Amino acid sequence: MSEPNKPWKGQRDGFTQALQYMQGRQKGLIKSIKTPWPKFNDAGVDGIEWNTLTVIGGRSGSGKTLVKDNIINNAFVLNKGEDFRVLEFQFEMMARVTAIREFSSVVNLSYKTLCSANGPLDDQVLQACYDYSKGRIKYPIDVVETPQSVSSIERIIVDYMESHINNEGSHPVYTNTIITLDHSYLIKTEDGQSKADMLYAFGEMLTKLKRRYPIAFIILSQLNRNIENPERNEDGRAGNYVLSSDIMGADALMQHADLVVGINRPGYFKIKFYGPDKFIIHDESVMVMHFLKCRNGDTRMSFFKAQFDSMRIDEMPTPPQQKRLQTN
Image (cartoon, rainbow, N blue to C red; front, side):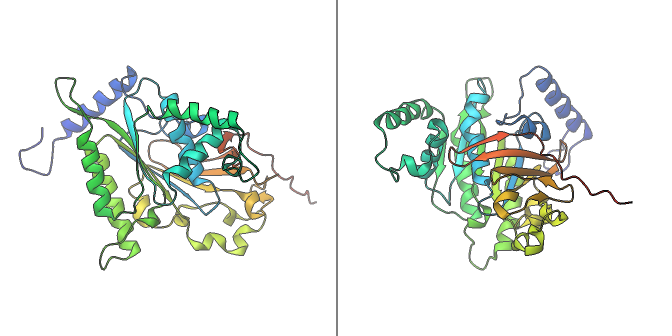
């Protein structure tokens, strides 16, 4: 047992908590959050566990926001019967933009079409979006749009978690909450604080809060500039692959993360034969997810189709490899 006012606790507590968690999962009382993709779920622990930090890194145009949006847009449908909320820190896109992107995935039309850039939007399509929104707004999803510092993000999360406590049982229980943040680099620095210092403080804050509350953090990050070096975009090079060191602020975030996913779109960057395995890339829609760190799962590389016009991501088979030339 824990000693009063002491920073240590007995090993017994760890084993007791582990067995309770295992039994809860055995009986289906404790579940991970399912994503739309079995490959993603399998890389984790049948999805994204609570009390964890997931970092999704990618360069601009790779689709990391699309990955996050697909997880959130499908969360309540894929995890029916589970009691949880969503809090999104959207510093890059306005909530209006995110909503239109979601409509796009429902009616299978582009953002531009929904904004009447290609002529007035059809009334039936607008009605379909309206009908969809009536079903969606019942879900407990909240948004913070104004950029914040690390300390203000922490205060908002603590206030949010303390404001959503389930008092129906014999003991108050915090509500499970998925918390997302689009682009860690957009967090405001405080007086005298460098971006690097901010990211270290941010990582430490996330770990503190994921231990304290039943939160599943999903944090988006840019990649470092060296991913854009010309030699890394040459066909068949090991440098094609996203590495953990490519994640911006990797030292600050990697040690705190439970799941780290690096995203690439080889065709978008004119790579036809991806990596030393020379996977054949036929078009720009191919998205590669490099599962760089899976604390409780398995690292791997998986392939997907990113349909940006309709804001969807679908699994796809691993592409064939370029045949190696035979030499005598």
